[in-house]
Amino acid sequence: MALADFGLFGLGVMGQNFALNVAEHGFSISVNNRSLDKVDTTVERAVAELGDKVGNLKGYKDAKEFVASMAKPRKLMFLVTAGPVVDKVIDTFGPLLEPGDILIDGGNEWFENSERRAEHIAEKYNGVLYVAMGVSGGETGARKGPSIMPGGPVAAWEALKPILTKCAAQVDGEACTTHCGVGAGCGNYVKMVHNGIEYGDMQLIGEAYTVLKMVGGLTNDELAAVFTEWNKSELESYLIEITSHILAKKDVDCMKVSDNSKHPDDASRYMVDMVLDRTGNKGTGKMTIKEGAQQGVAIATMSAALDTRFISFDKDVRKKMQGILTGPEVPTVEDKGMLIEDVKNALYCSKICSYAQGMNLIRDASESFKWGVDLGECARIWKGGCIIRAGFLNRIKSAYEQNAALESLLIDPGFSSEILDRQRAWRRIVALNAQIGLPCPAFAGSLAYFDAYRRDTLPGASLVQAQRDYFGSHTFERKDKPVGEMYHCLWTEEHNASTGH
Image (cartoon, rainbow, N blue to C red):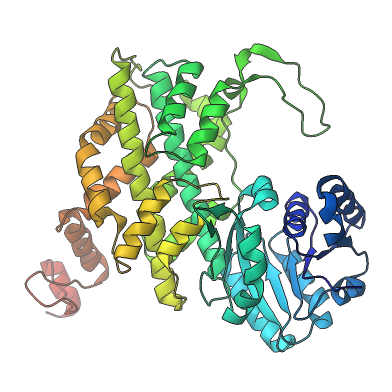
């Protein structure tokens, strides 16, 4: 019997879909799972979905038989819950593998865990290569073609490349995958920042929707039409597209998750109006904010998005506060056309800032860890398969191709000219929201980020550093002296006495 090109352990929906994707693209794949019934389910799906490719997928219920079924060097991917389960999977299959074999973690793991596991594997399972690989696009992406972000040894990438480039999303004749960098956690990191940008995009769209609905008085059908038009513009993206679909959807086809029972439909209502305003998060947003702080990179838009999710989830407290904390009445504007155009411009400018923040975070981490990440390639592989896919990414790719050392997207000639042309509209929307009491933290955070970076001098920063020196003797640099020379001031007589001066 011919040996399989690939193996996959972990047959949840994502795992099943990716396995079918591999088989459909002409590669033979062996599958295995801790719960053996899912092996049967996956084989049944292969029979139903793969047609004449059905023979490419074979199920195994014994770990040793599963590993033995793969051609060397074995390429064994697992898709399991991040955390301790990953360590168990590694120590289950590690003893069964040989030098040159490749273990691939396709989950949303914290990058430092992947770095640690690479060291563990190198020490305990000599010669086995480890790849942590971001896979974005959800269930549909896994089945039809995701954006795939692998890091780790170049030799592992070269072995995986023929399979990954076929199974990834394809845009403009190119596969949405690349070798992200040599670090074991590099692929995790790029995927983590992708998810942080995703949080920012979703929050910005939510704020645009809120202004148009509450200030513009647009109906759901009008809102759906606006987002449909925006999707034909520079804002074209998957998230804008699905927003137009969501806004047009009536209250039908709603299923109760716990028992799959049908909810009584009311086709006169819109589904979006029935969704409770409590937004969840699965952790990757938190990871991005944590890493922004660790690297010392400002990511205001993403931070605002995560904070808003926390506040939204605190629904009971918001209900109590509503009766206590009052604000201005929200007026309805008459010139809907101007409002729509202003909101569009505010959304686009804020989006540029959000992506600039994400790219800077990847760049700084890559420099810190010596990963060698190509930012233009990051933008390219996000053009298809993933949640933030958008035409806008072509512009980002070009910006980094023209200047690989670009300090920020904000100073790319194309992006900077667009922001300068649109900033008045952006400021009008942020000011309007502040005046009428509608929160727009991502719009406002993006604008504050822009305004801070466009200034050579930040007087408040001088004052804060002086305060730090006053109470903690943290020292400071002087404007009239070379950077790096540190000074301390004896601010009062009390300071003089305490230091003996």
